[in-house]
Amino acid sequence: MKKKPVLALTLAAGLAFSSLGAQAISAQPVESQQVQPHKLFDKLVTKHINVDNIYNNIAYLSRTPRVAGSPEEQNAIRFVKKQFESYGYKTKLQEFEFFGYTAPHTVELTVSGYSGALDPTSFTYGMDGNVTGELVSAGLGRAQDLADKDLTGKIALVQRGEIPFAQKVLNAAAKGAVGVIIFNNADGVINGTLGAPDDKYIPVVGITRDAGQALVSALDSGPLTATINIEGAEGGMKTSHNVIATKAPTFKNKAAKGIVAIGAHHDSVQGAPGANDDASGTAMTLELARVLKNLPTDTELRFITFGAEELGLIGSEYYASQLSEEEKNRFVGYFNLDMVGSRDAGNLVINVADGNPNIVSETAQASSTRLNGTPTPLELGGSSDHVSFTEAGIPAASFIHRPLEPWYHTPDDTIDKISKEKLQDVAEIVGTAVYDLVRPEFNRLKAIKGKEQKLPHLHHKQEIK
Image (cartoon, rainbow, N blue to C red):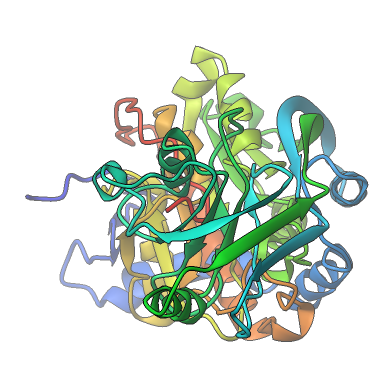
């Protein structure tokens, strides 16, 4: 299928550009006619980026976890607001409420007659409880796996895969089970969520694939009794905030009436300092706000950090829901920065939630082509706040390195694993792409925006199945 053009670029000098980089419009040399002038605009951004500012702000933000609704998240919110204001921005806090969850402080699993390590983990939205019962191997925990099993008063041992964790728990509960143990289908621990609270849940823990397979083998030799003990899980309504800084057009008489936004999420998961996820994106948003503050623009710029992303994109969904139709129609695009600095992650990619290139992805690819010689790869991907904008009919893309580093969402997501080189690279690509869209010489009014489409509401990084 032929890619539709999403942007017509014009310069006062009469230059034309394609969506993937400079393209000559006459027989004159490309470098002298187009690329060099465009690079001069890029340099207005790149020469002012101070990667030490980004790194130091990551270090500050990642001193502790920043769980949504917690005092630590509020500290991060105050810090971000203060930084925006120090650059001269008018900044506001957008408050919203959500159902918050505090992970249990005690998660225990014992199996009589089994001496191997189990090291259980909890699931977000899981409930407290102390239950003991006969252990029963129950396949993948699907309805057909449980059809001929009597789980009354027993604990189901099921493998991860095919259906969400929550459905495995509910299926087992419907058959009378008092608890569930889910073992992984790949190396490592399960970092899982049940997706939402439900009164029908029973206590559930996760274990590794090796531990689960060992228990399945042990059951072949005779019955086993398991005990699950979970204490300290709490749920209830909590409050978080989005932080919004706005730069009005400097060319007010010729303002293009559009809006371009850059953003990231400032919260983290419980127990993780979140240096890369996503203090890196938050700190980069702050630095690009500083760099772009005094550059001439004819388009409104918004810099936003969102709360409660890790619980299901709650902050960005609320932000998008509060936009007027007039604002939505003015929105040119949203650049999302999520996990942009890990030294141990893979290469930079651009994720789009609907699988289609748009003005954000193509402008960024044009920038990366000018800066690095090749366009940053485009991939289908949700898992972050750009999804909320896409669902609202606003062109959006997320910048992330893939494959992910092994310690995201763990206590090891710390500042010592941040790469200044990667931070510099992403800041330059996104910063120059954004400036392309907001500088007065650009014509972004011909941008083609996709129609609003509703996407599956499961685009957060915590695993659900």
